[in-house]
Length: 179
Image (cartoon, rainbow, N blue to C red; front, side, top):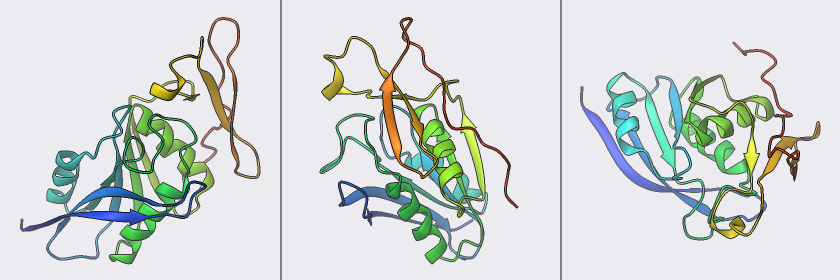
């Protein structure tokens, strides 16, 4: 199968605004389903996973969702608009349905996105944690324990302290699969 590959910049209007780096791999003929690929705690662009999905007929996009220029250095206060813009880019390239594939911390992000964005048609969460943790990364190394993260009913992402044992509970659950 002939593939089209390219690096690109994905703009978003999240709280911090700006852009994120990305990699797109797609079959030469557009119009099939799309998938946003989110790496775990490295925040890296997962080009190889995109190529694998593209060989299966999907248009696959991976973005650096933290740790890049103008982005938070760690997993804290990452705007969900980053991912909404990325799934929108897949739709603009002809994807009829768009899923999100996330690994570890990327799986947590994918699950949050699926709850808050009606444009997410499917989620594949590879090795997600049972809790959603926030404030992970170099700028929070001084914290004695991480915070848990959840979403308010209005869609605002918030953080709060974990319990005495360093555990919290995930305030976001996937209620139903769409489509």
